[in-house]
Length: 442
Image 1: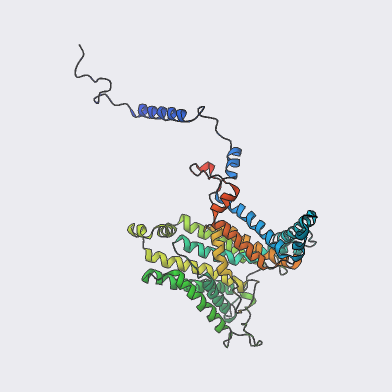
Image 2: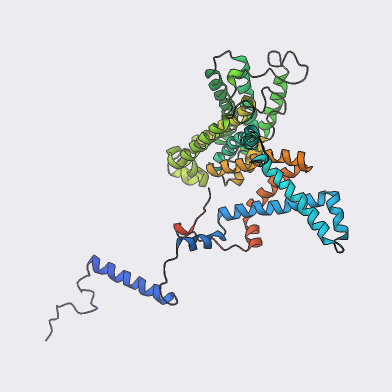
């Protein structure tokens, strides 16, 4: 006769299994479930090469960006063909002699893109060191200020703000950097440092205004920064013709030249335009990446950008964060602007000295996915397009505006990844496993 007090199988009074036994049981159940749902049982673990090939045609950030460049070049080639009367005329009798149209189109497009490469990266026909380094020197010269303005827009965007005012902030940076460059009699080295810091200060002040207005009154930063762009441009136009600023030997709107002691040193000698600003751009990229990913302020900035209400509930000062974000963004744009007058682009203030580096910085930030190193690579691409576009216009007769069209097409395709996925039939990227996501951004 059994003991009524003894534990029976299946009884809730049964002695519980140990943790080790419970773990083994759960693991066994999981393996059986996977074997039941996977045809043929567990297969061999895929190799690294296979994972690479599988992800190469997946809709990850790297693939979409690369294919966007290809699409932009294809559309650009079509625009070159239809804008050239001689090449377009060969299509009038394409059914009779199709080789004429094909050869003429290939010659035009290949020469144009070859000159784009020779003007931005390397010219195989170069016979001297300066000629060989000239393309990359021009690319780096155009790249340096775009890195700063791109970082300015990207940093503000990560903080939940859309900084349209990089153009105005860069303009104020140019103004203060130039004034410090020809008004302050300082020794070399110190003079350059003061001029660079003055440029950062000018941008920071112009960024503080929309930041404090956003934080204190809720005024939208887009409207404020756009209006401040106009104020900065007209202030520059007025300032140039004032006594003490305008070049006394000129009657047109141009300021006194910046002293040599306040100019950035050149990297490859006096014959090439690349200057130390590109080194500052790399350091700034590293600093912004560290700020966003390794610092407490960066965490607060990203938290406010993701959800201001949740950040406020967690004890983060949204007001303080908004102000700091715009100040840092303005300082970066001001540094980019200062390179336009302290570098080799210009040595004096003119109404057009700032060019479009602030607005181009918005495109660079979007192309770089508002990530610091992505922004640096996007700025390098835009710098190469601008440097190569000059040679493409001179040697191939292609309008320089076509380079701007290429830039716009690249951004359009980058901003519409669904279109790129549909055209190239990309698979969805598998992001569940870290090892199979080879390109989650730069």
